[in-house]
Structure formats: structure tokens, C-alpha cells
Length: 141
Image: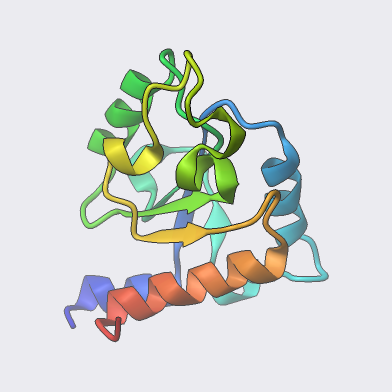
């Protein structure tokens, strides 16, 4: 394990890409940052710049308008960039799977490292997803 990968296991910077979500996932993500769950003590923080992100967090269903922008976001990240698909919509489309406005799923656009299921996923499920990401970085998965 190189020095950058070892540092990533201690401090993940997350950029949240909202691909037309219903905001339930967003509320649960913010709940994850409150003192009750407090993932910032583990070095996990939401950031506003994709160029500094280690993890790209995708929520919602990709639509025809967000597909190209999401690909551009992924191309601007530093490599290796981990991708987490949060919620049932990002994971497989949920009830929007065969909709006219959702041409594909997140994993058709970029390689997804971890899926966090739920509609909306609870903070405990998100913490479990972060643990899976860290284990993947360490090479244990």
C-alpha cells in the first residue's frame, strides 16, 4: 500500500453529485454529519470541489440532462477516485428504471465501487458503505 492510499483510509473527502434525487437521500447524508453519527471524527467530510475529492457520491437517477455532466465530474476527479451509489435510485433506477428520461444507471456511466441500498438509506447503512470503501482501498475486498 502506497502512502497516498494509506492516507486515504484515514481521511476521505467526499463530493456529493445529485443526479435528480428526491432529497430524501440528501437529508440522510446531512444526518450522517450531525453529532449523533459524526463521521467527521473519522476524517470523512463533504467538500465543494470535485478536484479535491477522493469519493464521488452519486444520489438519484441519471437523467438525459445530468449524464454528460456526471461524466465530466468523474473525469475531473483525482485518480484513484472511489464512486459510491447511494440509494435505490442510483443503485438500479428503482421505479424510474424504464422511464423515458432516465437512459441508464450510474454504473453504466462510471465504475461504481460500493452500492448503499435503501430508499432512503439510513446513516448506519452509509457508515457500512464507507467501511467497505476503506476495506477496498486496503485491498482486503
